[in-house]
Image 1 (tube, rainbow, N blue to C red):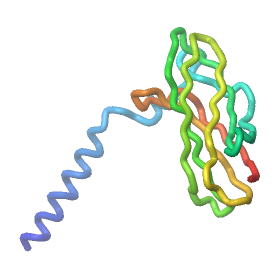
Image 2: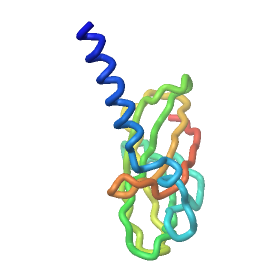
Image 3: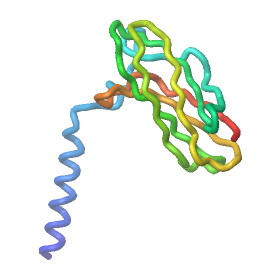
Amino acid sequence: MRIRAISIAFMLAFVSLASCNPARASALSACSSNNCWFAIAPPGYVQLGPYSAMEIPYTSGLNTTSIGIVFMVVHNYLGQTVEISTSVLQPAAGANGTAYAIAFGLASGMYSGTFFVVGTSGVAMSTTTTASFTI
């Protein structure tokens, strides 16, 4: 009986804490021309010396210099996540920059990459872009 009461208490605490989260996904993903980075071309596969990478050019819609962490989430042909890679950009207001996310250690094959940018505080700074590539 005591274990059941403790289990119920933990479940209620979890539900209560989950509902208290003040950040909403819809608030974090809304982009407009003055608060986001925008991909200005589709991601492309490139060789950087011995490394395979995906390059993706962004333009900043912000009115100040900003730092963004560009994520590349790689999925194999089964849809399984096989790698997460990052790149950092710091464009000036309204400037362009190109991120190079290294695809390290992937076997030959077809992959799909999902790209997005977050700020150093973890807030979304772009919409999501996807691209297929072959290594």
